[in-house]
Amino acid sequence: MKNKTKINLKKLIISIFLPFIISGIGSIFTSNSISIWYAELIKPSFNPPNWIFGPVWTILYLMIGISFYLIWIKKFDKITYIIYGIQLLLNGLWTIIFFGFKSPFYALIEIILLWISILLTIIYFYKINKISAYLLIPYILWVSFASILNFSLFILN
Image (cartoon, rainbow, N blue to C red; front, side, top):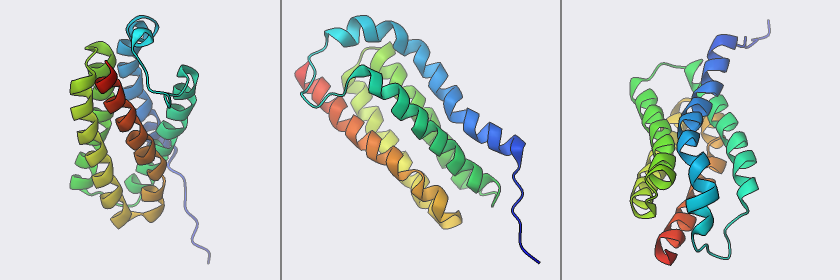
């Protein structure tokens, strides 16, 4: 008899929507700042065009959600869930600090904490489901790039 994995649609939808909800909260602080404050910042030569951020984050949030879903259906581990939740909150908080408070310095400190929390999430997810950990690698790579970009924006401005 084959072992069939049944998709838990409710958990999948919640898992996918959770990162997007956090993103939505952060976007409240982003929309006004991009066209005025962010547009006036001196940017490094490697700064991507603004249009790239939306598609990249959409793909990343989808991967983050699927990654969590694979953990949620496999095992309940309170510490892993807490670390994942902290990472999500830090993700949303960066946007609020950078765009809402217009503070590249404090956003830089916060993004370092975000990077550490993503790394911890990957480590804890790996213990439960390797694929879920691998799905987070593009996320930590993008946040690594965003950290360098944040540092550059802080130094240049």
